[in-house]
Length: 602
Image 1 (cartoon, one colour):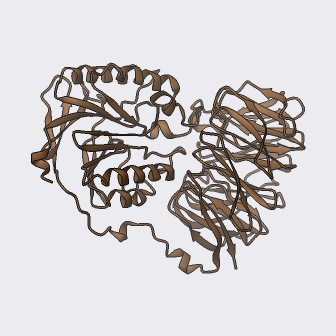
Image 2: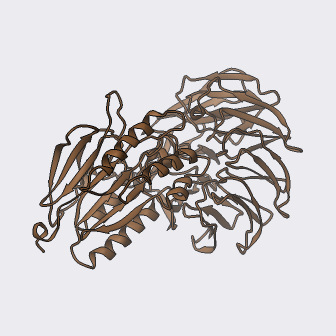
Image 3: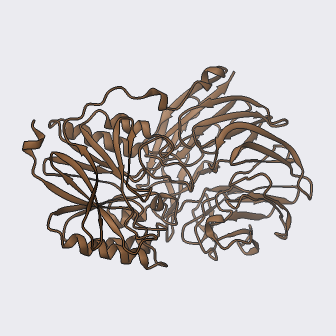
């Protein structure tokens, strides 16, 4: 096939990093100028938008940019970016609800164009392409390639390279099998080109003016070459890059760039009992009733899995992603879905026993205590629900933002934080407010919201993105002590005897503090050599072993008394969630790569 003779010259525009906000009019002004400029150019045949359409991923901003883009005289196609994919009150579902999907695929002029999300889900996490998106990508490209060597253009937000996307190699392994001309995106807010496993990955300028007086966008022309132009509003466009167009054949991948799994050879005592892939990514921790495990995934399926064999007992499909960890008690599994419902299922059969409708996505993890499930939603409410009848015992509706944490029952009170900057204590009996605490910060992103609080000795312990470790009086909410000496973030764990609290620091270190004292006393600090870390997975102790999971697929077993690292095991290169230790030698853990694994230490 002679590509140069067979195609017609055509051009399209690329918008990225528009960052529309309800509180800042400048980005919308910039977008409107770009739309007017595009509409005046008859050579532009369609527009692609590659992520960070909004600043905060909120529904109002998403609807505003959708309405603006509908003013275009040509078709447009949009994929989400990291500002749309970090958890929000919608559970990252509003983008798909407004635009119809968070990805796109279409044919034009004998070529194929495909775009998908490559941003993180957890705040500050690495970029990540979900397993269900990789499966979708592979299916689409395999189908297109059956018709011949169709030229393919790929669109993401993050570049597909080490340091930006944790599982980049899973994506490039798919792309390298096809006639991919290049990858295009944004994120860096400037024009750049990277070599990503042999594939050209072109980043483009932000639509915003920034410190300049005028804004601009990108225009791509396809003919005998792929030419990238920067078009500043009111000025002649300037070409800054040209890539060859034609049949692509990629050689061997560079193995040196890939994750290093040699640690598994160094600790051969760690064995996998079983390993299982689910349909979608997993961002929650499984729970067990002693025989079966229960966990939900990113495509909305709740699984019951045989604990000994890893075989699936049953599945229950909610249709939209499940974020929060479930709870199980007395034969009932309770969990929330981003489809606005809280469910109670029969643990043996998966049959729905009841559901409670809410006004927004439910992302909070569930806690069950004496037949009552406690779970927070995205609509500013904490629910107390009878697990056998589904009857709502009470709701607390004074929250100003959504709940993500697993609430803690301690004595006769419920404790939890939200993304409204506050940490709450409620009466278990009626849900009335006992006290609420604020860390002195007004920025919701610094809220003690992801941490699963722990309590002992009349004290509640939390950490937050403000890097402080905080101890509060359980009865009054008064600060007992508060320190930023250890650069913790959003993880906390409690020893089995209630005398020690643990946290994972942002650089290589696990700290253990005395949980019995009214001042800060360090028991030990262990340099565990896991690098920069921001994964809000809790360190949990079982039978004297502290189980610690990281953002890059590493699980550690540490001596809870000394902090000595006993062993390490690497399962992948993406987020491992809070582990489920069954003993000091057995542990089950899930990953954002959509896996659940049972390991045993010999």
